[in-house]
Image 1 (cartoon, rainbow, N blue to C red):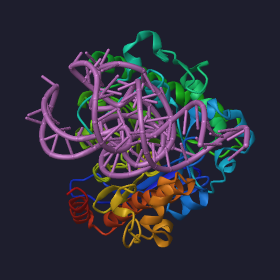
Image 2 (cartoon, rainbow, N blue to C red):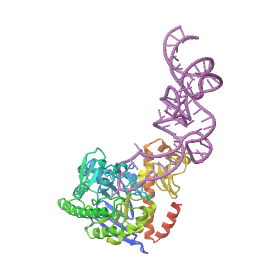
Image 3 (cartoon, rainbow, N blue to C red):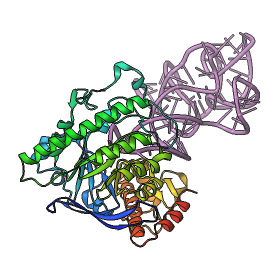
Image 4 (spheres, helix red, strand yellow):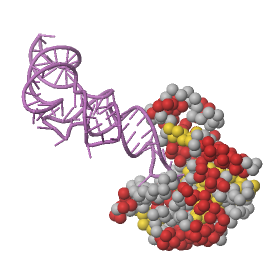
Length: 402
RNA sequence: GCAGGGUUAGUGAAGCGGUCAAACACGUCAGACUGUAAAUCUGAUGGCUUAUGCCUUCGUAGGUUCGAAUCCUACACCCUGCA
């Protein structure tokens, strides 16, 4: 409405897929979709300046309401002029609601979703009832801060107020994250709760917008849960799709093998004209599958985290910079890569920085990885535009996973 | 020259008669990381190996003992006082 937030589909790929290109317009700028949204949890993309994020091709940054609420405090971010201004990011921003942190970290589930293996692991803390750090009720979630153990409470309304203060262009509804371990009956209860919370988020957001009409429009995306169950996912899509959200996030427990199915079920139910964000993915095969099934944007910590921990992307898969083979390798991380790191530094040098625990290693590795994933998504966008998506997918994945 | 202390695997450093192929740290090698409690975590690290298995190690050489990295003797080198 009135140009403050808008999503325009530019081209549908068709051919039995739900893939499309489009443009999300926000008060802070446009996002060409499909797009990879860089994660900057604590109002910073770890080890990267905004200029470096931009240089790597980043269009938008996603921060986290939970972290910023705890530190430095959402009021402070508001006082600073909002998230984008505070962190000097000249572009669109997102905030996650904090639901994921409150429940995945707080409750003691180390791995809510082991996407790689089919196995499900639980943190020891989860097994000890006395050490649970989060408790869900129909009103909200009470949890303990990971910083100092202090007790806090998030409700849908509170999450909206926090995110409203932080001032991102796109915010997410407060949802309950379940685990694949939770029984079906619990998933049903939880989904009902998430849906009620969604309505409350919309109501609260309405109030907040009315109370401060001078502020730029903040879009609100509803989050689709439903774990691995088709009936629940479709039900969630129908229910949420009928509510006046600006777009949708697809979240929750997703087994890697089922990712494509789940996204398709959901997107077959949701209104096609609304933007869809998939929360927390960035592995190339997941990206192709998500986009093919109608996802417009997604975010992930992986490129920076993995980079800080020594892994870099190549067209033949991830490699570890610390490996002895690169000690005397004076080529770039990746041949023909256009990123700042590959244009200017060698594997031998980056390995030296990494082994010496020099901070620049984090930066150079993060720049390369972000660039690599962003470029992949950019290339996919181009392939949808010119109709070569299927060929790109086949050749790209064939090379990467061999 | 006299007195005292020391010499342990890549490095530092525990061990001071058996449960020692030898703690621990670092280093090295390899792996993991998907809405960031992550500049983190996991495994390996004398040799051969499937091994609760065998072989070779704790400055060097000898000795005591059923048994020694651990006790004794000699030698080598290093350190600290006194000359």
